[in-house]
Length: 399
Image (cartoon, rainbow, N blue to C red; front, side):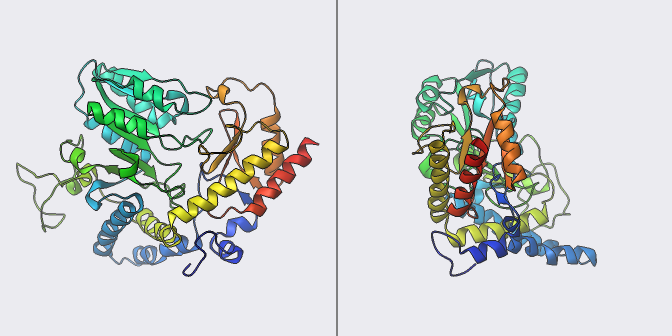
């Protein structure tokens, strides 16, 4: 992919790297991103080695460390601030269970707009440690940054939210929340599964203490692999709930070396890693992140948000209820149709969302329904021409 435009990929490159787009308009990245042909073939040698009984573990362990470094570079972190996890959900659970909770402590979140996996761990911790789940109501489908900041007090230990919500997909304004967390020493944890790899992500600029992501969406990788960023100052004072060989520092001793009565935890976030690594997932993530970084995330963000705004404007022009109305600063890579006031999941007021979804699927446009809203989610392989086709198909359906 060397030599490609900094703002878009030529159509022939897109079609070669992402063959799925030759058969459909794929706008379902928030559910599952496409992988590239380069990523697919990157795993061949490792699988061939396994097929033939060749042990490439040493090389794979070196690749784990290069992949850790690559993700750190992608989000503006240091290598030792990154843990390799199974998914975003594991990262959330790791942080939640390492906090030294006391009865009366609280967690602040906007429950309406979070995925279940950023709610369930906190419900369990609430019941286990007798802490308060301090819930802030959504405002017109957005996480209200001022209300979240106002909910934070001296007993707040964690504030958890998404950088971009799964539905309706608005970007979260982080600065007031980060400032409020710093004032009281609360841990700011964000789920970046819907933004990392698509929107420029800098953990220092965001002011977050922790960030989780899975690789199968915007990072264009596989299921079963994720990353946890934990700021060094926090990681070094948090004690893992689980411990395994790769959690501890044994110098240059082999993996099979005997364990004695005392161990030294690894510095930083790697202390949270359990068991062996998903090598195919690591290989895929290393390859896909390499492609993303070669293009440049700022260039990807510029291209994707431009296409998303074109889609939102086109759907508005033909009279459909685009969440957030006229596209603006809140617009990222996701455009949703429906009533954001219905985000709690009550029965839809009419059948139009479901019928439009069926119409688009019949015409080879891949999108999802989430909480009675139709979600279009985009990446670098989506084009303005595709957007115009979707708007025309929708207009035909309306007529």
